[in-house]
Length: 397
Image (cartoon, rainbow, N blue to C red; front, side, top):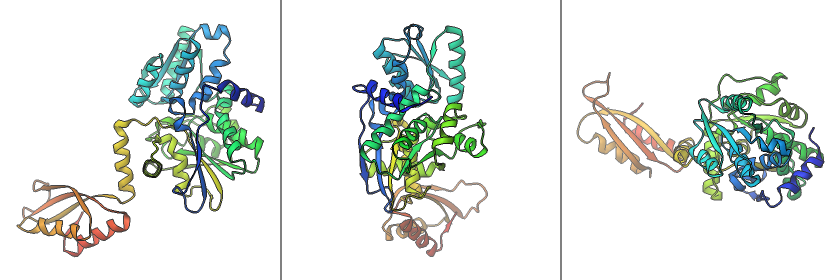
């Protein structure tokens, strides 16, 4: 059972291992609220996961440690376990989904762990880890459904209360529920009036569905850029903790996550991964009532794969109306393309790409399709551009 004594013990054990990460005010996330961000993306290994992984590893008996440890993870717990095991001189095997970001896989190997890539998502990696544990006798380190892990993660909540003791709302990402279980427990012991809300990706709402229906449920599949919280089923311990200490759970869309990542990059020069940015997305889009309230968003990690970061940014720019992709049907005769491009230029939009296609099926021989990518200031500017194009007699598909 989780206790405040365990959290205080975790804080002592983590001293000199985990950073006390920055917590500062942001005037950009929501103009109607007093928003702070807790930057676990700046933690050692780039994620809060080090806290729980290290505290759990430190609690192992000599006999458990001698067996070596095995864990399953989408990437962040993997790095936490690998580093903790390296510091303790314990062999570590980590099962990871084969689609886990390459940066997380290589970082885990860099800390000395053996990585086993598994087809599927986190839950499939968990099944493989259970199989190997039974076969080889390893000591299993669960990424969230463990009191010691939750206690380690709960030190995030202690740090929030040390700096913003009068916080009214705290928004926390949820995958399996280890982080929010520890954070909510800590906060409710210190400031029972503070509301703690969990945030999940709309494509992976396992804890939301389970809490709503009053029983642990398993999703058939998950689909989200927030790979760190793409969990099909919460744990029984974390489910019970969320039932008791969490005030509500909300979801955010892929576009909303992308916009949160972009905002953090542009306004704070800070990189957050999808899972880490969901709390900011919830605050940006008023998923809970934070108007006029002192609100803390926990940014749980920053281990985004740079190979897909440009796609995330592109998605956010489109969602914000700052990049527009459109197809225009027009007569295939001299001067038409010039008129189209002039219409776009006249409203101050910047053309990034133009493709002229006469070979499209099911259109008249006398017509063609022009695909355009244009850069605009915002949605209003994009709408003005579209109106100008249509006013010149062009058909926007």
